[in-house]
Length: 113
Image 1 (spheres, rainbow, N blue to C red):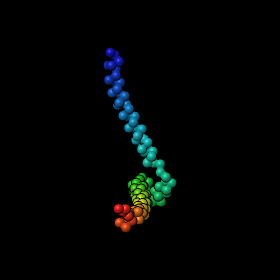
Image 2 (spheres, rainbow, N blue to C red):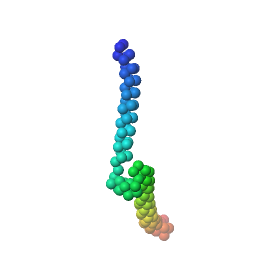
Image 3 (cartoon, rainbow, N blue to C red):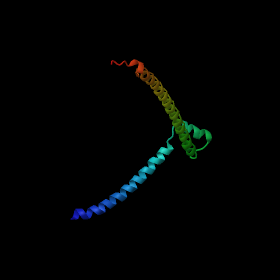
Image 4 (cartoon, rainbow, N blue to C red):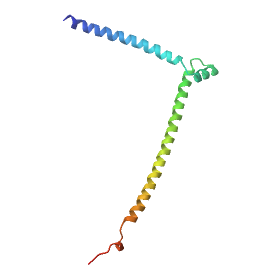
């Protein structure tokens, strides 16, 4: 019975301690990540004279670059779809020609009485 009584208090203490340690660790890692920047971002921040305010522009630049990537991907997909549609049209025309040539006409049928 002593293990059951100790389990509840140990579980509660572990939950609280884990939350505190996780929160502190998350905050430290997030701040470290914000402080580290690529050379291009550091150059932009230094040239504009912004130390901490450059993070807003960094996010805008990341967003705009991802928007450019999405636009390029969209255009590539549209080109591929157009190619597929053209290929489908060609195949339909070829199949239409084949099926029209293979349909027997009334003159082709000869009946033997």
